Picture (cartoon, rainbow, N blue to C red):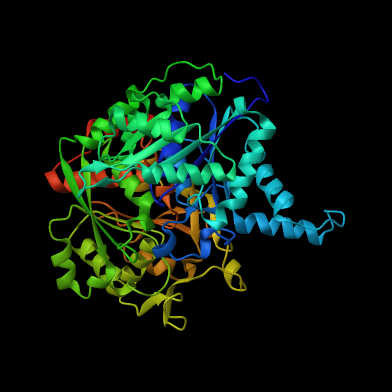
Length: 554
């Protein structure tokens, strides 16, 4: 173990092209170090000038991940939390925008004592301060630098980590660089030049990587690794292959087989035990070789880009683990649902329907048609955030016979069953102003939600502006809709159910953000359990699920 105050730092950079998987690589290393008994945290430095991704299009940026303290962050923080099974916070995601905002605020207050404020030292000092803020209580801090070497936006971050290593000493900091080794079919061979050029660009900035993680869809082989090591000035044992895999949860195992975690510990002088990966191997085996499979339709607004629903995707897979089933996700754009006929054609053969979150009117009527088909045809249904709101609108229209809508989609609608929160009515800024972060809720006795959680009070993460209107609670309840979860003061609806349906539940929060492969979220486990019963005609959940739920009540 490290001595108190002697935190070790690992910096993960990328080259050649973006989206190679720096986040998965960093998270996988984090998992291996956690299994060695170390206290690990991860942080993401994003070079864009937005303060956070909260106002960015899901099509451009993917999912906005929300932490307990209400930070809107990069989706890689979801990978971090899922792999190391630790909750992170606002200080774990830093952007250029946030750094400059902080520096400019200090300058306006006169904190720089008349100095000319510059990128070096003021911006780089603020970046280094952000790294140090994550150190207390941790043996290792893993910092991922977004973008690729050569991007002008990344230069201040790269300069900051170069300086940082000089300050803390080479024995306390390690540079890890992730590159692409492409297979050129015409030549019939792997090409190492992109990696060589990427490392050269990094060295021109003053950073010599200690380790290289090489992405490739072909095995590298010892000769290729030896060539990369020679031309990139790293040790042979520090060239690690990151192959294409069927599940991202295989990556820690692949890294461990090549000795990545052992090499890191040796270079940083970390004395640890060998990692016990038995549980991790078991969950990977369950994901890769399930005895049965279920089909889940995800009907949403951004299904053309799966990263927009990354946490939903992972939570569904997690939900299959205790149910001993694999989950086949069928992504469906809500625009294709124009009536009950098209809904029936699309959902026939599915074992469950999930409607995730989103903003704006586009595609909402299609979601209404999908939810109606699931309700009337007794298909297990799970609605999240917007999914709950759509379910309320559908029920009010087709069961209560009201001309209902949300004021988000129709500001002057006759029956606003969904309306803007009182705290949001005078908000003008869009960024960071929603109901964000963890809030408690109380569950109704003898409800599906209580059976899933095994606890009467829960805490879940939120990201929304509109709520179920309290003016229409009574009429919804009179027609059979159960409000099974509410805020502790009873003022906000958190969960709805239909008691006479095989499994029909909507929640205002985002349960996918707290699901882990080693601890599937109770609602996702229960939903996939219902889908399994629907698929195979079973009357109750598998023993593994019932044992998990019994254990959660202790």
